[in-house]
Amino acid sequence: MFVKTDLLPPDAILGLTKLAAADQRAEKVDLGVGVYKTVDGATPIMRAVDLAEQALIKQEKTKAYTPADGAPGFGEAILELVFGADSEQVSSGRTIAVQSPGGCGALRLAGEVLTRNDAAGISAGAPTWANHKPLLTAAGLEVHMIPYYDTKASAIDFDAFIASIKKLGPADALLLHGACHNPTGADLSHAQIDTVIDVAAERGFLPLIDTAYHGFATDLETDAYIIREMTRRLPEVLITYSCSKNFGLYRERTGAIIFAGRNPDQAAAVKSHIINIARASYSMPPAHGGAIVSEILHSPELTQSWRDELAAMNLAVRNNRKLLVDAAREAGLGNQLSYITEQNGMFSLLPLTLDDVKVLREEFAIYIVGAGRINLCGVNASNVGYLVQSLSTILNR
Image: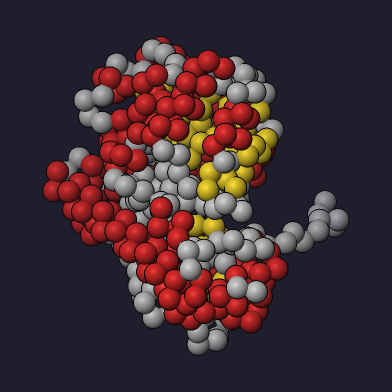
């Protein structure tokens, strides 16, 4: 049966990680894989996660399956975190959450529930996260790329984006980034979000908000603006949520798919289909990560500890942005990278070509994804001088 099976090339990002790990050059700079890292290159376990995990191990009495919609208390806690404990969206019962195997699992579920409900396709602003298209096309959706980011201007081309979404209709979905756009770091302003909502209300398309970095742009409340406003003003919104970055639960594969509908009956109906789809895929979600999140968010002390540490991580990334921009100016790059301090999250897109990225990797041991996406967590005081000097050989040619 498998005689004619060809070897596929490795995943671009995971393959780059292996190359970086194998590189023995002393001045290696790894700006590739999208995980939070401290100045020494570690991805630590958050204090609140560690304490919650210890408490769970002491009280756990069984390894029986977790409920189909997730670890007890998880969905309720995520809804209150995303919408606010006193929000109409939660109190009305018109929102539901189902735990998924990470944000990727949530996206796959979202794609399949859209396909089941005869979505004509989904549009995404270019560029977008590399795994969006594989996940959504595997679920049966046609993915259409529309303008979003002008790489020459290093800024959002909002006029082109709005012109494209004005062509969408009630059978279409629009993929939006919740905060900390990947790969560009360029987020819509609140005023621009309001304009997108106006168009969605007029044209009738369904927003799918992929929320992978909640709390990494400004803070948890501000970052939730796009979700809270869209679900307040629009009849139907899908949200995918990842706990990988803001809880540091990468390997625990903890996420959620959230639906906000017209009323509790519609929300319950959509939830039944999501669970039905999950049952035919992975059956039950993994319990451990969901239980950790639930433990943290049901404890005022752990919640405060988690919020404080998340805010510190956010600040560290912002400081890295400023560090890179200041060093670039000192290295003679002027304001070529100044846009980086105006963006959010762990990622930015450098004005590089694929050939430039190849030269940086082969000649300077600098590892960058695609045509210029960098993880700002990989920038620090000990390597930023070497990094900007290397970049200057490319950008000042």
